[in-house]
Image 1 (spheres, rainbow, N blue to C red):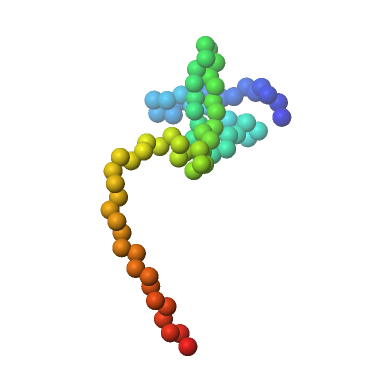
Image 2 (cartoon, helix red, strand yellow; image 1 turned 180 degrees about the vertical axis):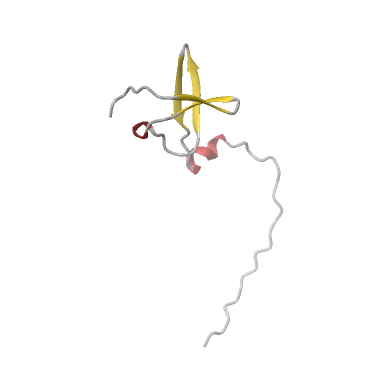
Amino acid sequence: MHNERHVSLFRNGRSQAIRIPRDFELEGTEAIIRKEGDKLIIEPVKKKSLKELLPVLPTLDEDFPEVADPVVEPDDIF
């Protein structure tokens, strides 16, 4: 794979778009784009695992009510 290609820029409504060659395709359906000087950097959005997400979620400050959890007797199936 080459690490440089000429690509087409075009208008899509009021936005400028770029055709990304197949060998430069990103995984997923979303990307982050940022500008550094006159360069554009495009990176795929990596989905966080639940293990990574839980520590950054806000904690809940409310108490949950008690839930009745009666033991269910098994049915006589014979």
